[in-house]
Image 1 (cartoon, rainbow, N blue to C red):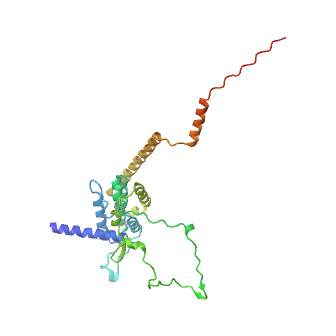
Image 2: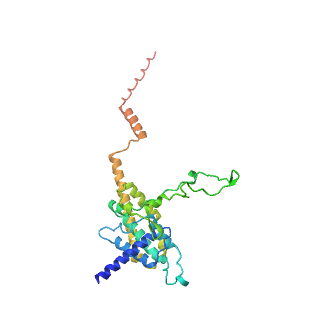
Length: 291
């Protein structure tokens, strides 16, 4: 019996890992058994005591985008013809929404109340996307239709018969099942991140989350998952941290006031006026004797 239970746990872990890998790709379509296994694994990791297990299925931008994409799409029709019974359909949007709520929203609420060590573990794999250049910075290149009397075609291959170089981003990815998935394990083993970078990643995560993927949740899911209480607790924790930060800044300013050139100049002028001796009153002219 124990062997059967262990085998079932291994199968569920394999399904969850497979679902996580496929959700973090550009084609995040996963069937219901694998997505349910991922959601159950995320719930167990989030409920781990005393601190959540953030290393299980690390939080990254691709995970947030993939789950949000699946929750916002319409359900697929069941396979017909020769594919009926051979290919499992994509999981329903409500399943994606549940995984989004547990793996993204509830984890973000936990990170808002976590110490710096929790932020290090939870945001180690959350690498910010590269900033796209503004339209003003992109040079406009005009390609002539003809060159030396010949029509201009696509770029010619290099001398080594390779038409295009491999993308540098693929060097940090793993290929699973013919699809490319991000590998956040290497980022988790990197050096600790500075606090400013942690706050930047947390701010990006909070700005990425949306209510739209949660609209596909079934009735009663908000209460069963505890979304309302988690959001209220996270907001209270954020308000308390903001008040503490404001008080700390005020205390530092009182202990180490920053010199204000205008104020200091006015103060010096006032002190100089006070230090000067008051001018002695001039003697009033004596009345001239009358003749």
